[in-house]
Amino acid sequence: MSKPDTMTERKMTPGENWRFFMAFVRKEFHHIFRDKMTMLILLVMPILMLVLFGYALNTEVKNSRFAVYDPSHDDVTREIVEKLQINNYFILHKMLKSPAEVDEVFKSGEVAMVVVFSENFYENLLHGGHAQIQLIADGSDPNTASTITTYASTIIGNYQQELLKVGKIPYQITPELKLLYNPSMVAAYNFVPGVMGMIILLICAMMTSISIAREKENGTMEILLVSPMKPLYVILSKAVPYFFLSIVNLLTILAMAVFVMGVPIAGSFFWLILISLLYIFVSLALGLLISSIVSTQMAAMMISAMGLMMPVMLLSGMLFPTENMPVFLQIVSDVIPAKWYILAVKKIMIKGLGAEAIIKELIVLGVMAVALITVSLRKFKIRLE
Image (tube, rainbow, N blue to C red; front, side, top):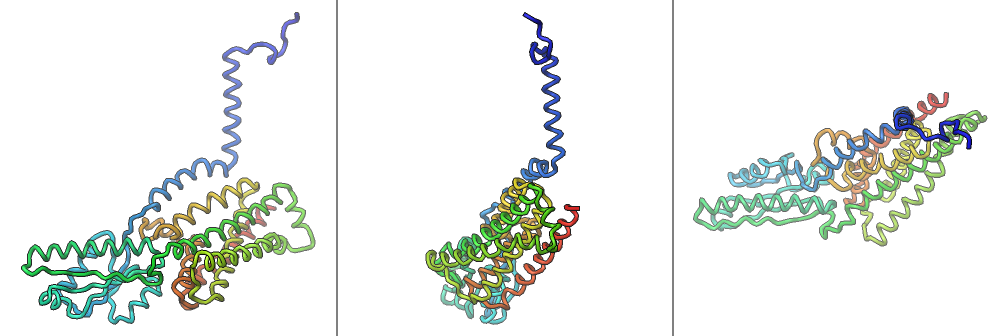
């Protein structure tokens, strides 16, 4: 029987096994370090997840802005307002001069709660032993409204106990709760706008980025771009089908929200569709930007699905109020398109407001659309050269 004359036929020594093993390990590290997108997912994604879930996933309600209407202007009402201020739950936003301003501050979204004192509050408390406070909250977000009114009622109750200790008369302050826009506290009023924002963004961004990445991965994008048609039209032609499919999704979601879940469209249907079409365009432009910085379908899917889902769920106000979060996360939330779309949908569908109430959201989404499409087209030109 002949001697084995190759390395594969003879038994390798432990030293040779170790050298081959280390060679393969170095090769794998080289491939990972060479792929910037893989490095980003492996090293940055866990940090982002920890920050987002650690700071944004918070059921407490803090730093809620409130306004006060106090026609009495006595020592007791001032003390109650001070009690509300000296904790982490509330921030006094403004003092109202008339009852008409109550609706205005809620429509503008300035505050989460308004405290309304009755006329002659201290006199009623002193002579009759009873006075009333009305706590008005925005019921379009039932969880937050319930939480902040509970906090306020507890603070007022503690103040009442202090009065009982120092006074001979059994003082009684009765908080009266009133929820605007959603008095029955139906949960669908809150999550339907959020789900609309998340679904539209994920579908538009994911499908557009994957579609164009597929062309680049297969090497057919260059062929399309050297055709007689301008590159801008080639790229936009990839997004147009998803624009119309997203409109179908939008109408389906609205139909289910109204006829199945019982969520009303209290405002203008025209402005709801208009802001939705603008948001769809922003989402498609975002998908175009993602496809301009990646070359494979897998990378496009990872960024558009995992990279967008968590920020939309945690930082758009869909699940948790952004006011509870640290300042740097509040700043990050401002660049998430879903936040502005959800705010606009709530104002139109739930609060029944008109175009004047969503001007800010229209401007922000419009600027985002122009910025995203501009950067995306420039990136495409650079990458393909």
